[in-house]
Image (tube, rainbow, N blue to C red):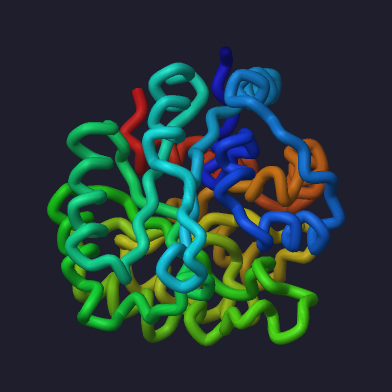
Length: 284
């Protein structure tokens, strides 16, 4: 396969993932106006191969806040092991579980061979990442050079329901939380997932100020990207912006049709689609 792109933000839709998603899985499918289909890892691998892409699999959990356990990290690790030409897997932890979360970071790295932790979603998990009570988790990630991906900005979980299912957007604001983490753990690479609306400028400012902070473009239709985001990507941030779809929330073909129409310089498009992620993930 000729590798054309690395989609750094993908949510598997296997039976196991659906079984662990709880009520919010159906709610998010309604919000994105899509049918919630089960897709095996084999089918997903074929789909990404057909597009000439690799995919970074993101797990998710909000067990402490909702009582709903997330899918086991072993499930995503198995996909990485079985389809190494296509998949890179991240594990996930719930920071509220303290030492248990620290131990799971260790296990993800040592036993499962995972290079990152994500998607950490402070809005659903209901915590501020810069609360020092959770710093042992980030210390373990930093020590192991594991990339940590955080959801930022508006979230689909709870959107359009009374009270947003109790989820609060204050937790997903990049400044001060992720700016503090990037400063306090300069050896830890952080990916701020999504353009972070309505705090997009804050995310861009962190990315300009701290070279250990990256932005992925997932979960937001490219036709709605702001001029500021495009301008910064085309210039100062061209080495730290990453292509991502948030599949299946946004289908690959739709995303690419809109992404291809963006006024990105060819050399920048190559970096965003492939080169930046290849360097970050240390791929040959």
